[in-house]
Length: 293
Picture (cartoon, rainbow, N blue to C red):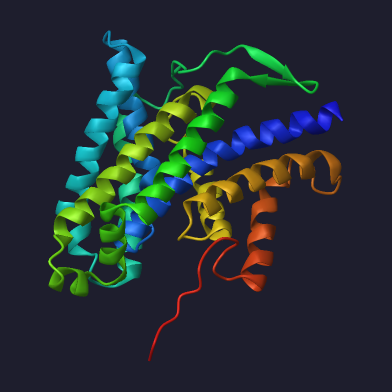
């Protein structure tokens, strides 16, 4: 039982890493209607900015806040001067552009700060506490609580605020939103800026656990996309629950399903995706889209 609890708790911790990126992907999709593959690269860049600021004497909390602000501005500028040229065109082209941005941003990080591992300071203590026989780090608990708070805030944003409803209206039908008097351009910039700011939070949470490198978000981005598919693009709560589910099942399958083991546990989320897409193509918590023709 102790081993099971330890695997379960470690899975929640890993799932929280995937969840924070998944939330940023959902935020961009709800604001613009597209999938942003560059989200991982933007999180890495913000993490390097935070690390650089701490190396030059700023306290960690202040450095994170400055990085969040800079990331918000950068996200808005990327939407305004890069993505806006492609948002009204072929959606596949826009997706390819975000993949190009991911490669460009991680390359710039490697060029500026090299590809060597760097130690990133942690927001939370590295001490562990005993929970039903499992050794749980305070950092894992802190990350978990931050993810829960962000999830609830995003759900409230999209369902209970004028800004959230305006962002969703622009993503669904920008022409009608413009005719209704909504500032479409500024809302698109705000959506990308908020997602980039969320990426800064993701970088600050993930870097202490993975060590800071330009490619630290590559595998996490794959799991985050799996969580988005499983949970549904329209549900912040759904993608977080899906990310936790992936993390827990991956850990349990590696130990208790012998033909999977640690070598094949990466296949677990893709098996889940296959099953869910057959049963519920909109995701576990997503809504069906009805189109009138």
